[in-house]
Length: 329
Image (cartoon, rainbow, N blue to C red; front, side, top):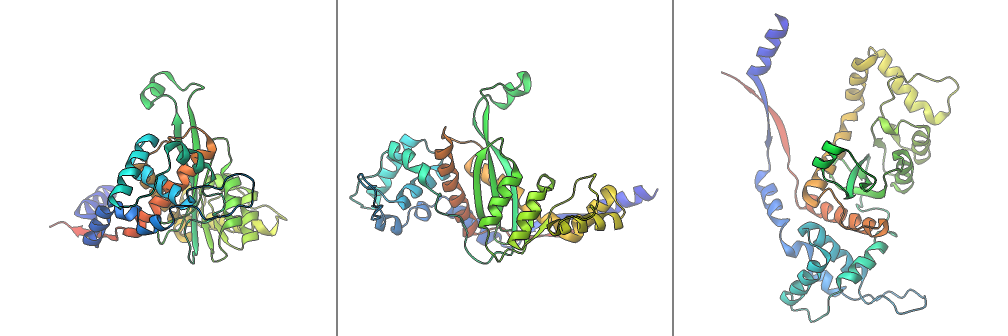
């Protein structure tokens, strides 16, 4: 009887999510397709490369900024490389820029050098960092064939690791690796590059490893990571394992098991981690869940450009909503 009464109350009090800034967010969605957002006057000013490498051989003719702009346009409008060259030629003509455009082979070759010297995509004081990984398809069978006949050795995919700022939804750091790379290894790399303003890092149970807690201790941030189901407080543990032992203790005091874990997640703010999954879904929906390039260095340049594009999209405007309880008559 009590369950039935609770179910009736839930039916009466239905929750609805409403966006409060729909007018501004609607304009931001329209601006995502505005070509002036992606190719500004700054691109024309930095068309050619003026950097002197000091190495033998002819220096690069086109700037890295122009190559990055071309890759961003490719990711946003889902263009093949050859179509991208034609698209850039038409844009240069409409901008009245009497300058040549790099060929598709130059864009592909130069893409593998992008992002190597840039550790962070988003600047500013960041207090929280949410980290997770997802898979991106390179080539291979489709989902229907895999479901019917299973995978084969020709099916290949990569791992995309992202570090998200939960306040701005911007991608702070990114890393593309092969599918055998451990998430904990990339976690340590992210914290080495993370700004000192980061106070908390959020990650799921896959990061419940000693190397992650040790990296967080070196950085000076608090790792909010759920312990494994069979986790226990270890005696004479190193100082960097104190956050894990504290979490285990709080889960036990809250009742242990799934109930205690759920209470710990609420009290620690662990559910902030879901924002990185939202960002990954946004990435795949807007920019695709597969990679066009075939080699890892060029794939890394492709992903770097897509992450830059996604940061531009989020900076244009994001929905601001809230849950509203509607009582039935």
